[in-house]
Length: 302
Image (cartoon, rainbow, N blue to C red; front, side, top):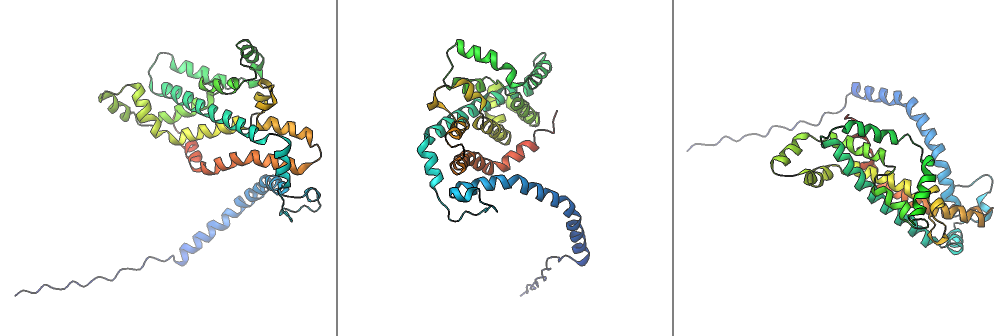
């Protein structure tokens, strides 16, 4: 009867511990990074401090808003400023107007920029480079130069005092040259073999756009959507020019209207401004990872 030799288990080696040399390298890198991080931290404090002071002032009593030295933590904290802001103006109505215009225009920008960007990246048409140069040239035209002809156009077709001038142009790519450029750069980074394989399987351009390009372009789409949503949400000039009915005002216009009612009452002003900034801040924090990824992956192709 043969015996099976028992295999003795080899002692597992302990994970390597950083030696003194490695610790010295890490400490040297940390010390060398101090001159870089100190100015960045000081600059970040200067940028963040006004925002923190605004949020703090929204919860302060009127006597504490302008107190000196200023207190960042309100004591006692109160919601009276928010009740005053909501009682003097239809805050919910203005919030709905801003959200509706921002969401619809964002959908339009995503549709037009992705479709046109895919065409410039994957359709081999004559003169496409010339037309792409013309598209880039439109980015140099200031928005305010075209405001009079566009106002006359919208007036002639009866779009004034409606949401149409603030939403429909985004579906047509108006003012979206940068978004189209961003999407084209991302589509150029997708391997051509994927589209060639889809074409061999019988997929046309539209199917390749819907089933291959769009699912892979999620970081770029989120970046474009975030840019357009913030631009539309903070737009003051467009609603001021095209809207005359106060019930259709957006939040930026409503803040200017509210400032006329509370010239020296800073607490309600800060409360209303905080409510205006909060959705954009939450959206950026949620989509920050995709936003950075989309920016990083759209500039490496030409």
